[in-house]
Image 1 (tube, rainbow, N blue to C red):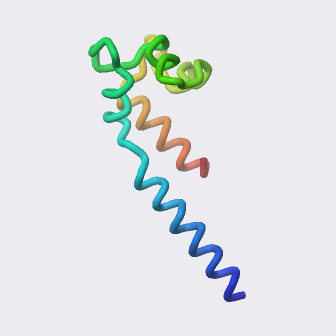
Image 2: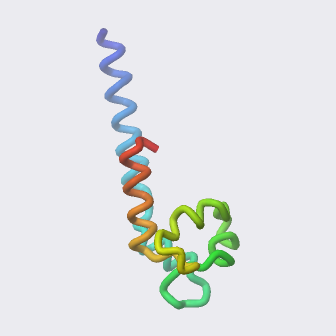
Length: 83
């Protein structure tokens, strides 16, 4: 029982540390936004090594650009799903 509690505590600590190291969505957008328009288009997205199909899921308003707000919403949804 004690080992189970310790293992669970270690998993929670690791998850918290991983989440704490995740850059803010606005910082990611700034990093990937090579043309400086404040958003990331599909070409910039894939050039940054991201999967093209993920772009379509995150581009909530389907305007061809991912904003920091859209990325934040997608990341929040992923955290809620446990992923």
